[in-house]
Image (tube, rainbow, N blue to C red; front, side, top):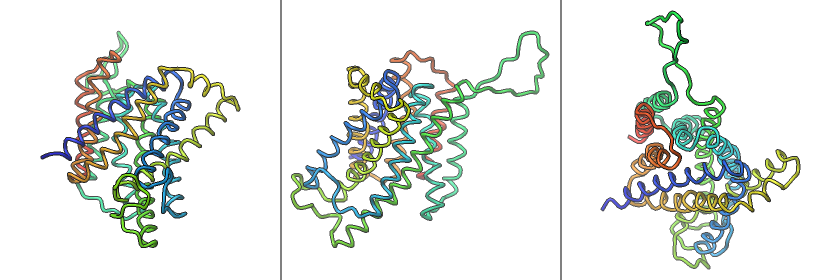
Length: 333
């Protein structure tokens, strides 16, 4: 009873742990080396998963259209999105970084409407405004006037309490995640079409698979591996360009045991455990319920961020996070 709902809550908790480890690791060695190391670890785990479920450690049955869409999704969601996300963690921390990730829902809704004809209900439109209001409540505060200056009591002055660069990075991460999700959905549809053309059922178990798991369960992992492949290539390219051809940042990262530990646990609780359980959760409960519970991460991360990083958390920020998550919930009503 409530298996899907329980799994969904575990996913939200797992993504909370991922964000905390990612903040520590990216601050130690930089966003690009951290992402490159984490993505390498992720590909190893994904290859092992595909070997067990598909019989080979690489995606099977995918055609050129599938590769094209999923590689594009990897560029947008991983290379650009994760780069900005880790930069956001460095500047404003994982707590506010995760808050801006709620922008992925309205982004996905808008792009889904524009490119794949998905319908937007009135509640989804309301959800966009509620999400934005929640973020605004969290990052805005009343502007203090200089001492001795005449004050107009009717004026309502606000100021950003976070660096603009950090806000930009975190917002870009949320937008890119939503865009990457839409591109992934197109890629997954192409994958299903490729199976249909080959006369292969999504409920079939691939020949040579060590675990008798139907393709419809293992295909998302194959899709993630395709995205991760271009993600790793992109991070290595950016690292090469930004460090002027020197591998020193990567060598330094590989010698930092604490950073490697953070990269491992960030990868394990994120792409591996988080993705696996999120797929399983949708088998036991409605997708809308699962997605709503997944979105609790910005709220769940408040307490550990305050305890571990000794961050001062105001009631205004808590209310803003709850409202922002409430806005996401409206997308699935």
